[in-house]
Image (cartoon, rainbow, N blue to C red):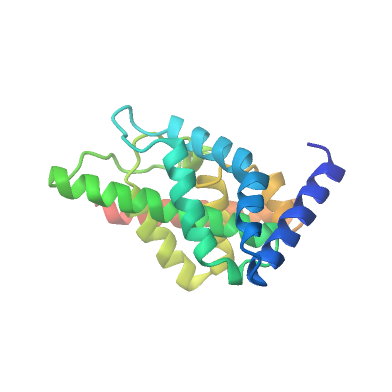
Length: 194
């Protein structure tokens, strides 16, 4: 999508969020229609990186995350807030699913997450979602923006360029913050595993 298309889509999502928070019940359906394709693509890419035995489907992930989002729509102001909330909702759905699965297995079998390169957070299969979620929650208490960057990269699979547009932030600054956030997360996850 070109820049004008992205801006138009952002304005449409922002207007629909305003309508929804004003009590327009039909805005929820129009919002779902406006964002479903993008959310489903993100969820499908995310689910493709999960282990072969993963039982949650992309459609179920989108639907559950969307239901959580609409319930909190009063706090969603624009496209950036919406996709930030979508990342958080997908994170919570995946963590809840992983916790339930691990509880059923009495220990699970997820391997520890490693962040050896820039794409590791978004490309690592079979990660321990519970440990990742705990680490992101801890980071959120210390530095909310860094936690948001990690959520955008991991749960939405956004590129650094896309994140820079959403925040908005100069790409150069974002790259520095991403490097720091990645190193912090690696350190935290290494400590959790040992």
